Length: 243
Figure (cartoon, rainbow, N blue to C red):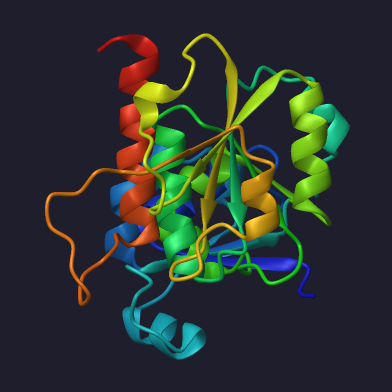
């Protein structure tokens, strides 16, 4: 496994550069981007910058989606499960076997904006934390905690013992969010597109809920998982806070 992250995209890069937990090796950007972001970056980090042209970045990164900047830094330190549980987590997100890094990045962005900062995922058959994910999260990756576990079902049982109620998003359910108790700590579980939440994980849920849809047929029968995540995060926030 690589020990460094290559981060590109303006929002993702600026967020990484300002993250005190990051060990920044160096960063490159175009003069135009440097002038745009220099006031947002600490002077110590500014000294590690190098101004280059866009073609240089195209060649080095082998893509044109960098928005004129990239950062090289050490990967974040892996989290300790017990330590994370001690923190104030009114809602925890679990991602069950999601594999698309771009979708996961979009989910991380939405989760952060709706106040969810601890995200748990299974080690096997899951997404990679890579440049695509970090760019897709648009700066939110640096502000959430991603916790990798070996066994989701064991993790869910531990969380239940800590007083959490477990809510799974399942398109085959007949229940909605209104059936879920308000005054509880919650774990929200999202499954992969197509397969959804795995059966054994479903059995460990206290509630299975769905997002009601007006139109549904054989060719368009479900939402993209990142779209579904944004909707359920908003609805959960509205439900809990009586918006």
